[in-house]
Structures are given as structure tokens and as C-alpha cells.
Length: 200
Image 1 (cartoon, rainbow, N blue to C red):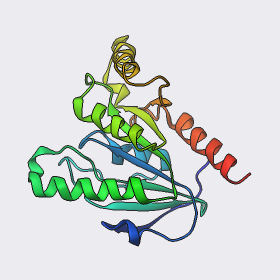
Image 2: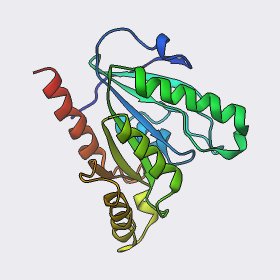
Image 3: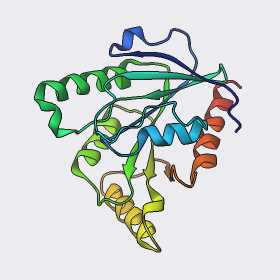
Image 4: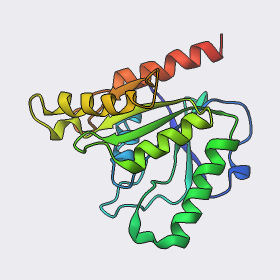
């Protein structure tokens, strides 16, 4: 899939103020500092589109970007940033949950997982919640370029083994690196295949 045109549309904290219409939306979410902004920039080929920050937890808004006037990338706030305080965490959780549960246009949620880490309780619980609510999602293992040799493969296999304890059928998963553009064609191809089904 080639992306020719990318435009920022709106940022907000209220799902009711998201863009009107029926265009499909592909939302990206993950724990703070998982590389979400870098992945969005890599997928769209626009370096400064989503703001990358050295400070985790900077995205506190729902950000909509329209792609080729036909579908949206949605950048959701990162979750699990402890230094935000309980009130801040509750606000973020409400923004995320309202969007995921109420936004009919959300076609697929890409959940980003840092491939360098062992399975994290917060991610496993979040996936369980997605499953309980029947939310279609895929996993993107990020920062693949940071691991050498068989370590990447063994980390991902460990994650998938953990998932199989809870899931009869595993969600689709992708391996990505914003540095090397690994996974770009696969993720965009997946989005394209879903769009073709929708527009058939």
C-alpha cells in the first residue's frame, strides 16, 4: 500500500468530538514509551507527524490523522505511566475506554508491545479486557532492531506461549522496527486487506 496524503484532523479528549462519518479507523495504543509515535511516523512516511518525546506519557489526547481521504490512523494515549498520579491515570483510562468501547468506526486496534521485555501484567490484563469486550485487535512487537540474533524470536515465542494460556486463537501479530522500517509493508498490507473487505 502506498500512502500519498496524510493530514492531521483533530485532537481531543472526548469521543463524541471525534470526526463524523463512517471511514474506518485504525487505532494505535501501548504502554508509555513503547515507540507508538515513531511507529506511526514510520508507517505514514512522515517524520514529525506524531510527536515523539523522550518523556513517557506525553500523548494525553485522541489524535486523528486522515490517510488518502479514505481511512484514519488514531493515536491513543499511552497507558500505565505511574508518575501521572491516580487522577491523571483515571482520566487517561476513561479517554481510552470511551474511545475503544463507543467508537463504532474503530475497525482494528493495534496494541504495541516492546519486544525487549518479558510479558507484562498490565499488557496481559489489557488484552483480557479487549477480549471480554469483543474488541478486534492485533499485536505489534516494537523495537525489534534493539535485539540481536535469536533473542527477538525467543522473546516473541515466550509472549505467544503466555497468550495461549488465555486465548484459544491468537490475535494477528507483527514484528516492527521504526529504525529499519521492518513490518511496515505487513501492517499496511493488513490494513489494506481490511479496507478492501469494507469497501467491497
